[in-house]
Amino acid sequence: TSSTTMVDFLAENNLCGQAILRIVSCGNAIIAELLRLSEFIPGVFRLKDKADQQKYGDIIFDFSYFKGPETCEGKLEAKPELLDLDEEFRENNIEILTRFYLAFQSVHKYIVDLNRYLDDLNEGIYIQQTLETVLLNEDGKQLLCEALYLYGVMLLVIDQKIEGEVRERMLVSYYRYSAARSSADSNLDDICKLLRSTGYSSQPGAKRPPNYPESYFSRVPISETFISMVIGRLRSDDIYNQVSAYPLPEHRSTALATQAAMLYVILYFDPSILHTQQAKMREIVDKYFPDNWVISIYMGITVNLAEAWEPYKAAKTALNYTLDLSNVKEQASRYAAVTERVHTQVQQFLKEGCLREELVLDNIPKLLNCLRDCNVAIRWLMLHTADTACDPNNKRLRQIKDQILTDSRYNPRILFQLLLDTAQFEFILKEMFKQMLSEKQTKWENYKKEGSERMTELADVFSGVKPLTRVEKNENLQAWFREISKQIMSLNYDDSTAAGRKTVQLIQALEEVQEFHQLETNLQVCQFLADTRKFLHQMIRTINIKEEVLITMQIVGDLSYAWQLIDSFTSIMQESIRVSPSMVTKLRATFLKVS
Image (cartoon, rainbow, N blue to C red; front, side, top):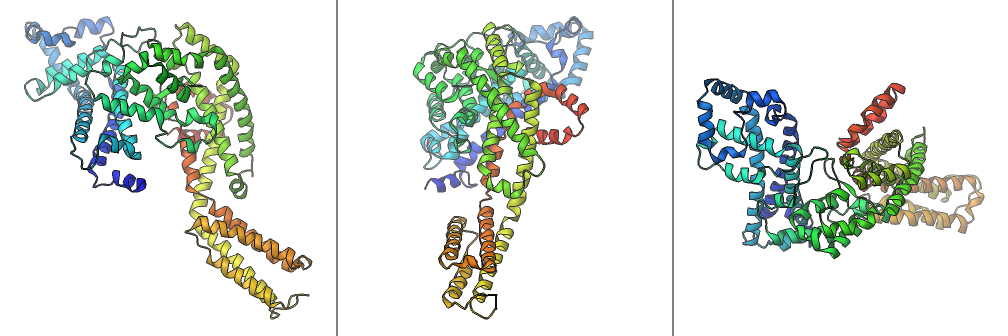
């Protein structure tokens, strides 16, 4: 039943599934818009330099404006030159201010919609669906976890990219310049309550406000049951079934990294866990952060847990073992060894003529393991050596980072070269697999036809009709080879498991008949048998070309965590192209991987 309910949950006529799917799609779109807009904040709203302060200081207000709008407007009206400036400023900025306002409004609408959905679930609006049943469904569970996580990411992105006082000034300007103040139904009040300055600053060395970000996360109340059930799922399940793409235990924290990032964000909705629940925090760290502490929470926005969890007693204590210098040393040395080993391997594979079809098909597990090792090593090294993840004023973080740089023998050029080679290796494999998948059935049917025809010919040889030197007529063998020919023809491509099993049995039968009937003495008969076995082997190889391999490569090759970190390699890229222009093909593969 689980598979049928799974299909049903996202079916177009399933209102419960469609509603949460819409919310999550909106969530991702909102974050994309916030990240886009953050590049276009009109500089004057920062009031950074003296000239801006003198010129615009009297027409740009923060939220203190709302305490006495009449007073502020009165001051303006007293000075005609200010009114002119205000009008000109309005004309120049109303368009961008409206875009920012709509983005801020959509964040507020998002959480209102999510809360309404949870109320509807609770009140039985969706027939036969409750919070519990949705969380039992694979898609439902993913979507509910994502819905809460995305809201947390929106709040963090806003604070990181659009400073609090800048937001306030933009909201007040929008309010003054738009029709919002005349319309009664505007929810500007609620939007201002949600987005008022938190006191946080992303400038290096800025102090973190007390109870940040949990007090910011609690500005709009959210069902506690929902929060605790989502945290429960994220703690216990592998919600994206990633572990199957990473069978090795040492890759486990990478397999669960997406989920770990979601858990990191969502824990701020229930800070008591971070503060006092030591057993839960120990369990979380053992499962997700035993060997890593710099995480990517969304499109390359990185967080160093050593810093982020500093204020929370239970979280900080649980992380102590991970951050112990002997563990740091062990992890860094391990990656130094892995990097060296896999880089040699990849370069070997990339040599001319190495990645031929037969070789690839016979070594799928080996090739995938190599890819896993490469990607896991690149990820760990890129995140844990990133400048953004280490506040230079924090002595402990600096000490940990120096230890990593020493013990991993870190060299950005070598790491970048490994990234290029890995990307090229993945690109070639993916293209080969796509090609092989598209030709798979045609080739399989051809091998089948060839093998079957060889058996028919051999049957004719033993019938005495086709004279072949020194082969006596043998009706038993004639019938047997005809039967084998029929068996080969009856193999069904659509039932690949059964066909694969049966092909293996046919190969064995052909080996046995050769020994049993002393057919080795006749070279031509041996050739027929060897050819047929070869075609049957090719059929097995071909049937093993599975879409799963491409899916695994897609999962393992994910590079979204490096979306911003990759910028730090720009100068190395430019230099390597100057030295060897042929590098461009590998760079192309790398950009495809990033995109």
